[in-house]
Image (cartoon, rainbow, N blue to C red):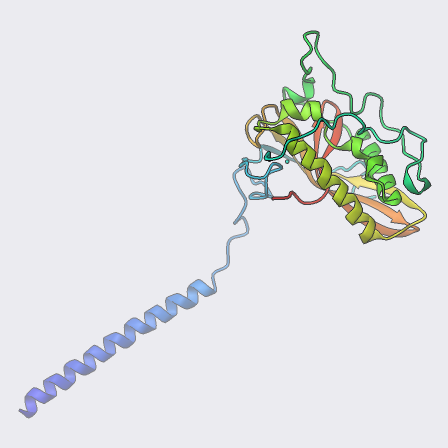
Length: 276
């Protein structure tokens, strides 16, 4: 009887030892998982895109981000996108004040490049797609982006979004650029969001007698091929662009969330973050 008890006791001790070993292994495995650090390239999509996984310019439309080109140069060197609403045709009355005219608050509207905001038409009446939105070439120069930045600063200083509403991507071009059930309705939302963002920047910066341009630095720029971002036509897209300015001598920074091109000109797609 005593021998049988000894055997049972031995089996119990052996079972207990096995349980302790298993529990120890599990605990060790748990610690390893908690201490795991992702490799440096974790979260970077194919092609090494730095902002992989960022929201598309048109919510609800998945995109692969296109081919990237990091904008090392700014306008000056850094070293020195619905439906559900019935849209009205908002192409008229969006140009804002003419150059030299005053908006609200007595702020003068700056001059824009010749042809800025003009969407050319072919002989058959359809929108003429510029070469820069048909095949990838050199990224458009910074001239129109700099003019856009001046207009945006004037609108913020005056608290008058209408002074720079012409810098929002043109309606006629947007209708052929985007593959949406109702591109005009979405573009109308873009204008409304732009107006809200201008007012938000005005409140953030505060009133300033003098809001002056310093420099504009492009952010992360990509060439968006067709059907990569709900688009029928390709375009250049630059995100997280930085507009550096001075408000009565005080340095301020304004982020222009997304700029896209039509021809050689740059336009605002989203001033602030993309709404859902």
